[in-house]
Length: 432
Image 1 (spheres, rainbow, N blue to C red):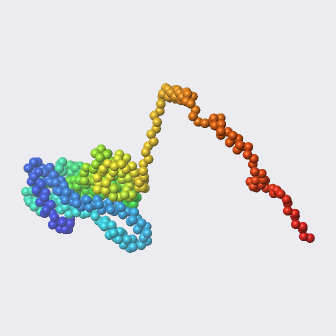
Image 2: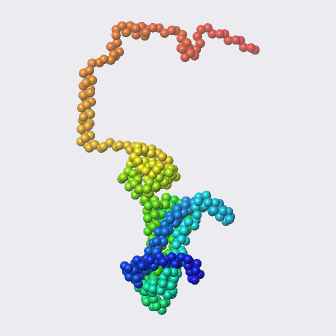
Image 3: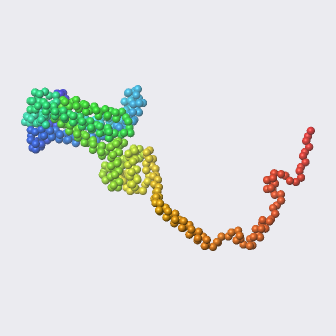
């Protein structure tokens, strides 16, 4: 432990100074020697560190999503060069370079807060051994040794013996009960955080080894926290429990407002966004405009949830613009499952079904109308000319035309009969 302490000695002084400053504030409210003053000082230290790590957390999210999108290409490389590990590594590095992705970016928040963790561990270990460290002098050291959290001293561990625990002014039962509860809560929060990531914020359309690794880590990390937690002082358990709860809440916020494309969280978010946009007929915040802009820019590469969102806007007469805004439009084009725009045919209006009495009255009215039409037709004079009404001067012409004799021996009749009339040519004598 001395080697680790010497490696992180450059940060123990700043960490101890921050704790003392928070302790001076909380000590005026709860008392300088209480566990609330020292415990809240550690919690405030965690919050301050995590606020400073938010840019790294955003970078971690982007790196994780970029790795998820690269999983199909990585799988192809692994299958293509499964017998050549060196070529496989070269192709992987080439893929990372072309996409601008760094696999270590997803570990940046953990690596960044590791020095603070070891510095805090060294400070609390100095309090347990009764040695000053950083800006913690003898008076602050005595005050910290008197501080208890639910009966457990800040520097006590689950594996400490009864003599050491009694020297800190506590009982072994209190220390083990408090540390066991905190270890269980710490492992449970870590498990829930990882499970939330796997069940809600992972693209379910892509089945890759990356998902299997994340699923394995969902069970490995809680077990590691439980094993190493029995060797952590109570103050360090407070640190890790606070940072796990912060991570869980931070991830819940990201999953709800900026989910991974293709995940269940995106489906729920777009459903809420559809209701909001159709109600107000516009996008109101920058975040909503950014989401709509990203969906519009994808074009035919949209997933099923994004196509459903665009089609829902189209059905109510709204059109998403490339700048992320939504305006009213008359377009009836919707997208099919493959992203091809199609025109929605108007629904056929079914006639309203009539009752029996209405049908009978309609039939009676129709019969009455038909009889009235017949009466009108009989009353009207005939204006058209029939055969019998032809003029008298036209009849002799017609009769003469009928009595005219047909020319005899017409070509048409000869052609139809197939016989040749007139003198027959004598047959030529046969030659013997």
